[in-house]
Amino acid sequence: MVSGNFSRAIFGAVILLLQNAIPAVASSAGNVVNTGYARYRGNQSFPNTVAYLGIPYAEPPLGERRFRAPLPLNEKRVAAEAGGKVIDATTYPDFCIQGSTGGGDAGGAGSEDCLKVNIYAPTGAKKGSNLPVLVYIHGGGYFFGNPANWPFDHWIHQSPNVVVVSVYYRLDAFGFLSIPEFSDPANGDHNAGFSDQVMALKWVQENIASFGGNPRAVTINGESAGGASVELHMVANTAQNFRGVIAQSVYRIPLAFPEQRVPQFQLFASRAGCGTESVTTQLACLRSASVSALAQAQDFVTANLKGFRQFQPVVDGKIFTDFPTRQLTQGKFKNVPVIVGATTNETLANGPTIEAGLQNYFPAMSNETAAEFAAQYPISDFASTALQIQVGTGEPSVVCGRHIIASAVAKRNRAWTYRYNQPNPTQGGSGTSHAAENWMMFRGINTGFNGTGVFTPMTPVEASFAEELIAYWLSFVRSGNPNTFKLARSPLWTPYTNGVKSRIVLQEDRQNITTQSGSFLERESANESQRCSFAADHVVSQQN
Image (cartoon, rainbow, N blue to C red):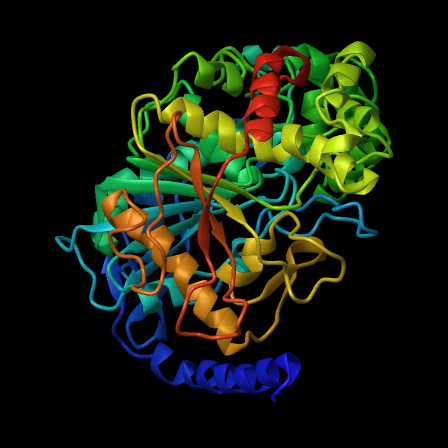
């Protein structure tokens, strides 16, 4: 019997040979899209797939535009700089400046001139093709992430009847610096990185038809911070046109009020060499400071400050007027169908106890409320203390996004939920941890420091399972239903209702066979429903 590692190596060698053959067709004279203000040449990554990489959607947020909402793309400037020539869009652009992952890296790689999108389209797609569109917002805690690590060429290759747009947006302090003074736009703007996403969606509305996409058939998708972003787009006070949402492992971060971010700003400014003078003077200094100084300062703040230490979205009273959980439970959200799910064993709230993990994750949570949360997870319900802590911290920080979003949407639309149960085969330990599905969906990716990533060859069984996932996702993009264009071997995915809380368990076939599915249906347990309802009822202590 052939071992899994040997099989993966052989299969990977074949894939590498195919990939090495791609540049022979990538330099052809075709694959040019005319947006009306510029012509872009894409890279033919498969015979039926073209990738247009690094297309700008907004003005570069440089100099005085630092810490401000993006400006619309100056199409006349782009046209003038092109000088009538076709613009090369065959290589990935610089990614946005990264923060430290806390794993020993210093962060700081990338560029401020990063407001770009990558567009993946079928060969020959053009205006009038009217293909449904998937807009993908990457994860990374709002402080790291490089879209080149989540490519979609093979998604189009598998299903050449959609267009995919992957968005770069400002991260960490560059995208989410916030103080009360930003309520006056003369000083800056709250949630600049989220406004980047909004601007990208507006650009898609105006331009995706040139790439063969239908602006009236847009689905937004993201994982982790990307999953939180698409949840936020559902409740944001912005006029956006999308018809469906796929939210993977929603990062249920606390949304601070600007007043709660003052200590963060002061430490950041001080560490960047901008003193403790007036805010106006500090901001002027920060806008002239080097990227290196700001990158080191943001990493110092997130590593050393207590409380609200991370640079993430805030309740600004303009884009976000309340916590998303409360808006969802009150029915104040965009009425669209959703797919929402989580992995089996994920948590983002780390600590030796449930109380410690939750209070570290939710700075406004009192000792009393943390104890009330912990009481929802008696040890008698779990096989071990480790599992008790993992579930007790994982549900409030991530997993309950599945129940909260699906329960709200199911009252007036269709919702499908999932439990992803296939571990990343390259990582040790037991269980299926956060972001495990990315390994399958994106060619065996494991992300690293400063925008890097390593792709591991996949076995035929893994590739077969990845095809199942992609088919479900793109079926939803095409029809608003994951079943319409699913693979024949895949089970029918029953919708979630508030009466029958059905979901699918997504996993490989356990018999190591590529021609049948290992996925199956189950129901959300009564215990999970009760615990997540408790979390939704205690939104103020979590601020999410």
